[in-house]
Image 1: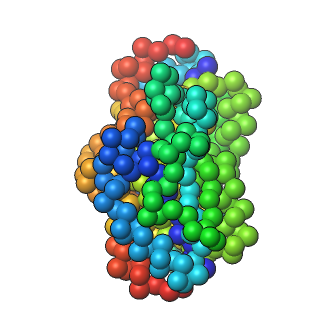
Image 2: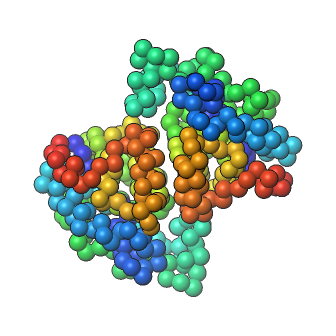
Image 3: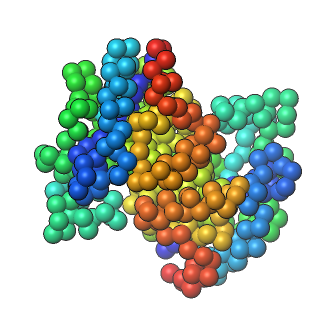
Length: 187
Length: 187
C-alpha cells in the first residue's frame, strides 16, 4: 500500500513574508489538497512530516540558529508559524511525524510507522525540492522503498532549482510525475 | 580534527568505457592526489568510502540490478572495476568504509569511525555530485558535522549538473571550495 508523505507545508514555509517562505510553495496548495483527497479516498495513509522547533532554536540546524537570536525563529512549537496551512490541515486518521533536520527519516519514527502500516511505496509532496523533499526521497531510495515525487505538489524558490532537482531525481530512478498521473493510481 | 572522505573513486566509476563511468571523474584525480597528500601531511585521516558489490548485484539498488543480469555489473568485489584508481590507492593508515547505497553514512560504520577518531569536520572529494557526494554531505549536515565540499575534487556527468548541485549545497550552508582554499587549512 502507498502512503503520501507531505513535507513542511507549514505557514512559516508557505506564506509570503514568513521567515523561511519558499516562493513556489503557496501555489502548490490546491494540488496538494487534491492529492490528499485522492489518498484518503484510496485508503492511503497521509503522513505530515513537519518541523516543530524550540523557541530558542536549540534543536535546529546550527546554520539557522541565528534566525532565533533576537528574531522569531521559524516553526516554533505552539506558534501559528508551525501550523500546517489551513487547506492541508491534518484530518482524523492522518499521521504526524516531527523532524528536526531535512529528511523525514532522520532520527524520527517514520521507518517504524511505515513498517507498522505495511507501506510499500511513497508519494512525496511538499517543500522544498533541494532540501527536505530530496533528502526524504533519497532516504527512501536508499531503503529500496519505491518513491514517486509529485511535481505539481512540490516546490522550490525558483523553477530552475526545481527543474535541476527533478533532473537529478529522475537520473537516480525516482519518478517525478504530475498530479494527473498520480490520480490515475488506486493501489 | 578534520578527515577527508573520498567517495567512489573506483575504476568502474572513473575510467572511460567502464559501466558507470562518470564523465568528469578522471580529470579530478590529480586534484584528489594533492588533497590526500595534504591530508596525510596534516595528520587528517583519509577515509575511502567505496562500493563493493556481490557478483549478482543482490546488494545494489534495485534500479541498477539489471546491470548485473547477463552483464558484468559494477564494483564487483574482487574485480579490477572495484579497485580504487591507482594514483589514489589507499596508503597505510588510510581507512576504508564499504557502502551499498549513496550515502557513506547509510548502514556503514562511518559514524562510529568518525567518533572514534575524534573528527570534528569533513572535507568531501569524489564522485558524483548528485548522488553519493551530495547524499554524504547532506547526511553530515544533518548530524551537525561541519562539512566542506572540494570542488576541484568532485565531479558529475556534466558541468551543469555539478553547478546546480554546488548551488544547492551552498544554499544549505555547505561550503564548496576550490582545492587551493583547502590547501591553506592545516587544522
